[in-house]
Length: 225
Image (cartoon, rainbow, N blue to C red; front, top):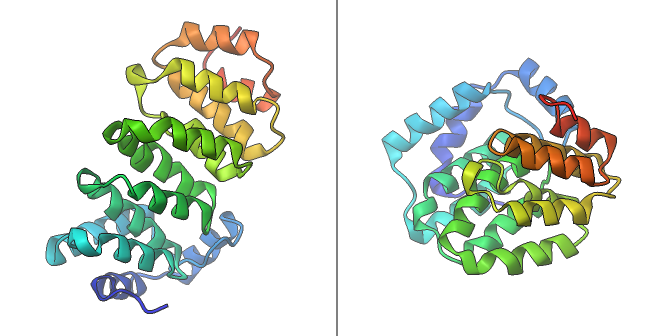
């Protein structure tokens, strides 16, 4: 796949910053889901900022093509850049961007990308287009795909007092018997974050709901029943 012309200078910059030792460690840590240039996150984000300052944001008409091109790149840093560019342009989003988010969740899937897309991109998208929330959530929950389901659990991660508690608890109950580590971990993480806003509700929910040991430990890391 030919890289979109807009991304060529960014790719060249990332390549110039590559560190084989960091790249090897990152690939191993991420279970070799992708190759890495080997750039520390603060340096990568700084370079993306420098790039955007010099070249500007992609025009709305090409934005999705740019993101898809970056997602097809073999290096993980370009995937991270795609997510961050998309989020920086979130106010320009249209309803059909949900298809793009779903593609990104389902392709080259691992926790690092899902855990950015869900509480950042998806969260904002559902605020912008609330009519898409339940049809999307129901479809993804029924999909049996762990990354779509994890996204459903985590999209409210940063919502704090705006969290739809009823929905969060309903989704967790639907997945409470799931055997997958990444689902159980997400359940605990989502509850732990919401406990910062509503600790009594979370403690009561955990006490009255059959959750895995992992989910309970993660949820109540800072509390005791």
